[in-house]
Image (cartoon, rainbow, N blue to C red; front, side):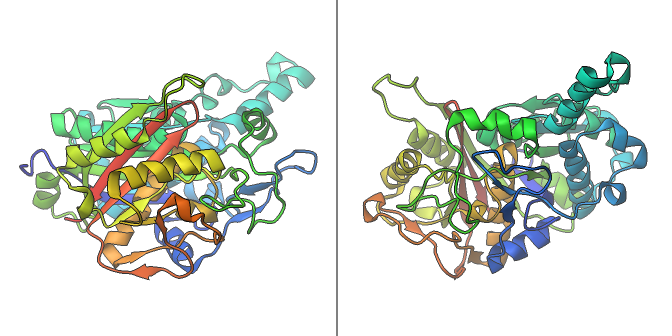
Length: 408
């Protein structure tokens, strides 16, 4: 494949419950520092789920233009901060490009729930004249794409993906597609969510998938015999994608890796008698990357934290790779499932695995059923050369996405 069609990642920006930028999140992941805590943003004592991967200490006034504060939900403030970090990391100054050569593709599973709830409360209690005009868009799934496009003058192809946990990988793949076509020269892509508000948490409860445990170290245990649901988290990541040739020509300070392969599938309807379609997504991503299963050095798992879905994912990995054939990790046990932000955060972990030659462990998990047949990294980080990583994400409702990243 020529450098003109190879798409690489040259900048990363992240916010998670255990780190307010990419490097701090990575350091906390390797050290096993958890961000899962009792929800403190509101009184969650009457909710069945009382824990969350809550970002604490984030001061939007120091990272977001002041004029945007009244316009934006917490999730958009996270997106603005992650975008600044990613663009600075890549040394991409949007002002130096034609604005139609720059695009933004984000994913969101929730939108601006906290902003929407606040304005609806004003409507009910104070009347329509008290509702912010920004309510018209601040709650919407596409708001991050719009605000980032305006903020950085990125007027090229821009869009939004809504596919719950799988959406962040889908957004990165869509960005790769636009860069390959030449529609844009640089794409800012990824996903973020911030569902830890009364409305946001209430909207998640009916799915019956959330953990009701009160111990932060025992609440989210994917692939563990004691798994009983997942912990919701907030945050996510944005990344800068561009052609390998353009990155080389402009002297990009860092090329973290190449987005080498991608595929997505949908599961059949419940009670159809047919199994999930995760394995075909994995095989499709490997085929797209021109990579043999034996060449994959690590897998970042979706890690649902539910016995049936964990068993499905383990079975798909064994079907494609064989029993205990590839190390599997789930760094998200330290931050919760962050919906559209989960896949991009795992992509950043995968890129830094390749950079540093280390696979982080799956924290808190210890009782993995042998019949799962996977080599789940536990305990301490596992040092080894890492050149190719598979990232898997599954969204509620039957979405499957798989992304292959390679070291350049």
